[in-house]
Image (cartoon, rainbow, N blue to C red; front, side, top):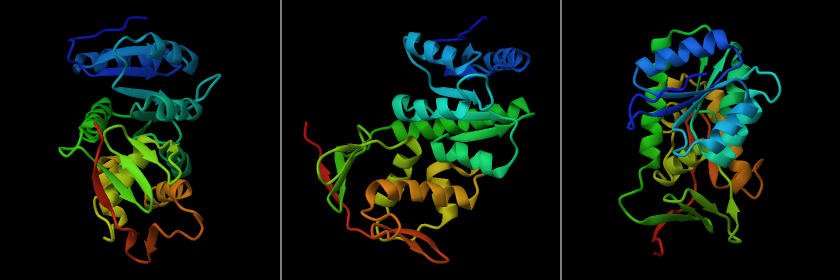
Length: 249
Protein backbone atom coordinates (compact mmCIF):
# COMPACT_ATOMS: atom_id res chain seq x y z
CA UNK A 1 0.00 0.00 0.00
CA UNK A 2 1.59 3.23 -1.17
CA UNK A 3 0.84 6.50 0.60
CA UNK A 4 1.99 9.62 -1.19
CA UNK A 5 2.54 13.15 0.02
CA UNK A 6 3.05 15.54 -2.91
CA UNK A 7 4.28 18.44 -0.77
CA UNK A 8 4.55 19.41 2.90
CA UNK A 9 1.74 21.94 2.44
CA UNK A 10 -0.72 19.43 0.92
CA UNK A 11 -3.89 18.69 2.85
CA UNK A 12 -3.55 15.30 4.53
CA UNK A 13 -6.40 12.87 3.85
CA UNK A 14 -7.09 9.50 5.46
CA UNK A 15 -9.05 7.30 3.02
CA UNK A 16 -10.83 4.41 4.76
CA UNK A 17 -12.57 1.85 2.54
CA UNK A 18 -12.39 -1.94 2.47
CA UNK A 19 -12.80 -2.10 -1.34
CA UNK A 20 -9.30 -1.88 -2.75
CA UNK A 21 -10.70 -1.64 -6.30
CA UNK A 22 -12.21 1.72 -5.34
CA UNK A 23 -9.77 2.88 -2.68
CA UNK A 24 -6.50 2.58 -4.57
CA UNK A 25 -7.53 4.32 -7.84
CA UNK A 26 -9.27 7.03 -5.80
CA UNK A 27 -6.12 7.57 -3.72
CA UNK A 28 -4.06 7.94 -6.91
CA UNK A 29 -6.55 10.45 -8.32
CA UNK A 30 -6.56 12.52 -5.12
CA UNK A 31 -2.76 12.61 -5.09
CA UNK A 32 -2.82 13.95 -8.65
CA UNK A 33 -5.19 16.67 -7.38
CA UNK A 34 -2.57 17.79 -4.88
CA UNK A 35 -3.58 15.96 -1.70
CA UNK A 36 -1.45 13.76 0.53
CA UNK A 37 -3.32 10.47 0.98
CA UNK A 38 -2.96 7.66 3.49
CA UNK A 39 -5.05 4.54 2.95
CA UNK A 40 -6.71 2.15 5.40
CA UNK A 41 -8.85 -0.90 4.62
CA UNK A 42 -10.70 -0.98 7.95
CA UNK A 43 -11.53 1.11 10.98
CA UNK A 44 -8.95 -0.84 12.99
CA UNK A 45 -6.22 0.00 10.50
CA UNK A 46 -7.42 3.61 10.39
CA UNK A 47 -7.05 3.87 14.16
CA UNK A 48 -3.46 2.69 13.82
CA UNK A 49 -2.82 5.21 11.07
CA UNK A 50 -4.23 7.98 13.24
CA UNK A 51 -2.07 6.95 16.17
CA UNK A 52 1.12 6.77 14.08
CA UNK A 53 0.60 9.97 12.07
CA UNK A 54 3.08 12.59 13.23
CA UNK A 55 1.17 15.56 11.82
CA UNK A 56 -2.34 14.12 12.02
CA UNK A 57 -4.91 14.43 9.24
CA UNK A 58 -6.95 17.30 7.90
CA UNK A 59 -9.92 15.19 6.76
CA UNK A 60 -11.15 11.60 6.70
CA UNK A 61 -12.95 9.98 3.77
CA UNK A 62 -14.91 7.15 5.33
CA UNK A 63 -16.92 4.26 3.96
CA UNK A 64 -19.97 3.32 6.05
CA UNK A 65 -20.29 -0.38 5.24
CA UNK A 66 -17.10 -2.16 6.32
CA UNK A 67 -16.41 -5.49 8.04
CA UNK A 68 -15.71 -5.20 11.75
CA UNK A 69 -16.28 -1.71 13.09
CA UNK A 70 -18.50 0.18 10.66
CA UNK A 71 -18.06 3.75 9.50
CA UNK A 72 -20.76 5.18 11.74
CA UNK A 73 -19.07 3.88 14.88
CA UNK A 74 -15.65 5.07 13.74
CA UNK A 75 -17.10 8.49 12.86
CA UNK A 76 -18.31 8.91 16.45
CA UNK A 77 -14.73 8.35 17.62
CA UNK A 78 -13.35 10.86 15.11
CA UNK A 79 -15.85 13.55 16.01
CA UNK A 80 -15.61 13.13 19.78
CA UNK A 81 -11.92 12.31 20.24
CA UNK A 82 -10.13 13.68 17.20
CA UNK A 83 -12.26 16.59 15.93
CA UNK A 84 -11.33 15.74 12.33
CA UNK A 85 -13.77 16.61 9.52
CA UNK A 86 -15.41 13.54 7.97
CA UNK A 87 -16.94 12.92 4.56
CA UNK A 88 -18.86 9.67 4.20
CA UNK A 89 -18.45 7.57 1.07
CA UNK A 90 -21.57 5.45 1.02
CA UNK A 91 -23.57 3.24 -1.29
CA UNK A 92 -26.61 3.91 0.83
CA UNK A 93 -28.85 6.31 -1.04
CA UNK A 94 -31.71 6.56 1.44
CA UNK A 95 -32.21 9.93 3.08
CA UNK A 96 -32.46 8.41 6.57
CA UNK A 97 -28.97 6.87 6.32
CA UNK A 98 -27.44 10.11 5.15
CA UNK A 99 -29.13 12.01 7.97
CA UNK A 100 -27.87 9.52 10.57
CA UNK A 101 -24.31 10.15 9.44
CA UNK A 102 -24.77 13.91 9.58
CA UNK A 103 -26.40 13.64 13.01
CA UNK A 104 -23.33 11.85 14.33
CA UNK A 105 -21.24 14.79 13.23
CA UNK A 106 -20.02 14.06 9.70
CA UNK A 107 -19.48 17.16 7.60
CA UNK A 108 -20.72 15.81 4.27
CA UNK A 109 -21.45 12.64 2.31
CA UNK A 110 -21.01 11.39 -1.25
CA UNK A 111 -23.11 8.52 -2.59
CA UNK A 112 -21.36 5.81 -4.63
CA UNK A 113 -20.86 5.74 -7.54
CA UNK A 114 -19.68 9.33 -7.59
CA UNK A 115 -17.84 11.63 -9.96
CA UNK A 116 -14.29 12.10 -8.57
CA UNK A 117 -14.33 15.79 -9.46
CA UNK A 118 -17.44 16.23 -7.31
CA UNK A 119 -15.67 14.55 -4.39
CA UNK A 120 -12.68 16.88 -4.78
CA UNK A 121 -15.03 19.88 -4.72
CA UNK A 122 -16.68 18.55 -1.54
CA UNK A 123 -13.29 17.94 0.08
CA UNK A 124 -12.11 21.47 -0.64
CA UNK A 125 -15.39 22.92 0.58
CA UNK A 126 -15.20 21.04 3.91
CA UNK A 127 -11.55 22.00 4.35
CA UNK A 128 -12.42 25.67 3.79
CA UNK A 129 -15.19 25.50 6.40
CA UNK A 130 -12.91 23.70 8.84
CA UNK A 131 -10.21 26.33 8.34
CA UNK A 132 -12.70 29.13 8.98
CA UNK A 133 -14.04 27.53 12.15
CA UNK A 134 -10.52 26.73 13.36
CA UNK A 135 -9.40 30.34 12.96
CA UNK A 136 -9.42 32.00 16.41
CA UNK A 137 -11.65 35.05 16.79
CA UNK A 138 -9.96 38.40 16.59
CA UNK A 139 -11.15 39.19 20.10
CA UNK A 140 -9.83 36.98 22.87
CA UNK A 141 -13.34 36.49 24.23
CA UNK A 142 -15.74 33.83 25.44
CA UNK A 143 -19.53 33.81 25.19
CA UNK A 144 -21.72 33.60 28.30
CA UNK A 145 -25.43 32.81 28.16
CA UNK A 146 -27.83 31.49 30.80
CA UNK A 147 -24.87 30.63 33.09
CA UNK A 148 -23.21 28.65 30.29
CA UNK A 149 -19.87 29.61 28.75
CA UNK A 150 -18.38 28.79 25.35
CA UNK A 151 -14.66 29.32 24.79
CA UNK A 152 -14.26 29.53 20.98
CA UNK A 153 -10.47 29.30 21.14
CA UNK A 154 -10.49 25.93 22.89
CA UNK A 155 -13.96 24.93 21.65
CA UNK A 156 -14.94 24.22 25.24
CA UNK A 157 -18.53 24.39 26.44
CA UNK A 158 -18.81 24.84 30.21
CA UNK A 159 -22.09 24.15 32.02
CA UNK A 160 -23.42 26.21 34.96
CA UNK A 161 -21.64 23.89 37.43
CA UNK A 162 -18.29 24.37 35.72
CA UNK A 163 -18.13 20.99 33.99
CA UNK A 164 -16.97 20.62 30.39
CA UNK A 165 -19.68 19.32 28.05
CA UNK A 166 -18.42 17.54 24.93
CA UNK A 167 -19.76 18.90 21.64
CA UNK A 168 -19.07 17.85 18.07
CA UNK A 169 -17.64 20.20 15.45
CA UNK A 170 -21.10 20.58 13.89
CA UNK A 171 -22.68 21.35 17.27
CA UNK A 172 -19.93 23.91 17.94
CA UNK A 173 -20.60 25.70 14.66
CA UNK A 174 -24.35 25.60 15.29
CA UNK A 175 -24.00 27.07 18.77
CA UNK A 176 -21.63 29.75 17.47
CA UNK A 177 -24.22 30.71 14.86
CA UNK A 178 -26.82 31.22 17.59
CA UNK A 179 -24.46 33.04 19.95
CA UNK A 180 -23.37 35.46 17.24
CA UNK A 181 -27.03 36.22 16.41
CA UNK A 182 -28.90 36.19 19.76
CA UNK A 183 -32.64 36.82 19.72
CA UNK A 184 -32.65 36.68 15.92
CA UNK A 185 -34.74 34.17 14.00
CA UNK A 186 -32.48 31.94 11.90
CA UNK A 187 -34.32 29.89 9.31
CA UNK A 188 -33.09 26.50 8.17
CA UNK A 189 -31.55 27.77 4.94
CA UNK A 190 -29.50 30.34 6.79
CA UNK A 191 -28.37 27.78 9.36
CA UNK A 192 -27.30 25.47 6.54
CA UNK A 193 -25.20 28.24 5.05
CA UNK A 194 -23.64 29.11 8.40
CA UNK A 195 -23.07 25.61 9.75
CA UNK A 196 -22.67 23.16 6.90
CA UNK A 197 -22.62 25.19 3.71
CA UNK A 198 -25.10 24.69 0.93
CA UNK A 199 -22.67 22.32 -0.79
CA UNK A 200 -23.71 19.64 1.72
CA UNK A 201 -27.23 19.41 0.23
CA UNK A 202 -28.70 18.77 3.66
CA UNK A 203 -32.36 18.33 4.38
CA UNK A 204 -34.40 20.49 6.75
CA UNK A 205 -34.84 17.48 9.01
CA UNK A 206 -31.05 17.24 9.47
CA UNK A 207 -31.02 20.81 10.83
CA UNK A 208 -33.90 19.94 13.15
CA UNK A 209 -32.04 16.89 14.44
CA UNK A 210 -28.84 18.85 15.05
CA UNK A 211 -30.79 21.47 17.00
CA UNK A 212 -32.40 18.67 19.02
CA UNK A 213 -28.99 17.21 19.85
CA UNK A 214 -27.73 20.61 20.99
CA UNK A 215 -30.84 21.18 23.07
CA UNK A 216 -30.31 17.89 24.91
CA UNK A 217 -26.95 19.26 26.06
CA UNK A 218 -27.87 22.78 27.14
CA UNK A 219 -31.58 22.74 28.04
CA UNK A 220 -32.96 21.79 31.46
CA UNK A 221 -35.83 20.07 29.63
CA UNK A 222 -35.11 19.53 25.93
CA UNK A 223 -38.82 18.76 25.32
CA UNK A 224 -39.69 22.23 26.58
CA UNK A 225 -36.70 24.30 25.38
CA UNK A 226 -36.19 27.76 26.82
CA UNK A 227 -32.79 28.70 25.36
CA UNK A 228 -33.13 27.61 21.71
CA UNK A 229 -36.75 28.18 20.82
CA UNK A 230 -38.65 27.11 17.73
CA UNK A 231 -40.26 29.91 15.77
CA UNK A 232 -43.06 28.23 13.90
CA UNK A 233 -42.81 28.88 10.20
CA UNK A 234 -39.57 30.76 10.73
CA UNK A 235 -36.84 28.60 12.16
CA UNK A 236 -35.01 28.87 15.49
CA UNK A 237 -33.94 31.61 17.88
CA UNK A 238 -31.52 31.82 20.79
CA UNK A 239 -33.85 33.33 23.41
CA UNK A 240 -31.10 34.44 25.78
CA UNK A 241 -28.89 37.42 26.38
CA UNK A 242 -25.29 36.83 25.35
CA UNK A 243 -22.31 38.48 26.99
CA UNK A 244 -18.79 38.53 25.60
CA UNK A 245 -16.20 38.26 28.35
CA UNK A 246 -12.43 38.46 28.14
CA UNK A 247 -10.60 35.16 28.36
CA UNK A 248 -8.02 34.82 31.07
CA UNK A 249 -4.42 34.50 29.93
